[in-house]
Image (cartoon, rainbow, N blue to C red; front, top):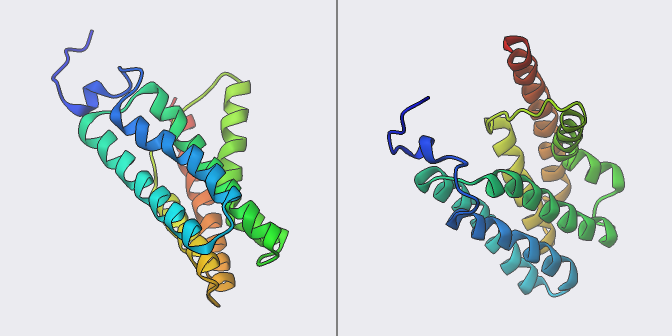
Length: 182
């Protein structure tokens, strides 16, 4: 049996919920609000708050520990917010369905991978990778361009889609090497 050292790593996922989970959970009502609110200033505030809670929950979890709930809820909250936000973009006609799918390709692939591993009862976690973080930043910048009515919307969308393809390749590569090591 491993001896606990009191380090944050030793406290990972031993508690049901933490302060980080409050920040994570807040993105779910923010996702709903983003869809329901039509005013640009309100959407801008919601987008900024959602981005901040995504940053803060990660920092707090790394600093003071995470929980089992947070490990599950964080990617769910992220995907719900992005799906709702880009659903608004799609409904507005600012981007076409192919562009939305491309923007969300990393999230779609991650969701499919989660479902497949759960069905085959072989769940595994791959730590966040730089490509995935860049995709998240690209998605947030694309949403910011949409909210502000910027002409950079489409170029940001395609740049983010390109990074998403790289992130999918990178996660697949790491997953394969992780699976072969087992």
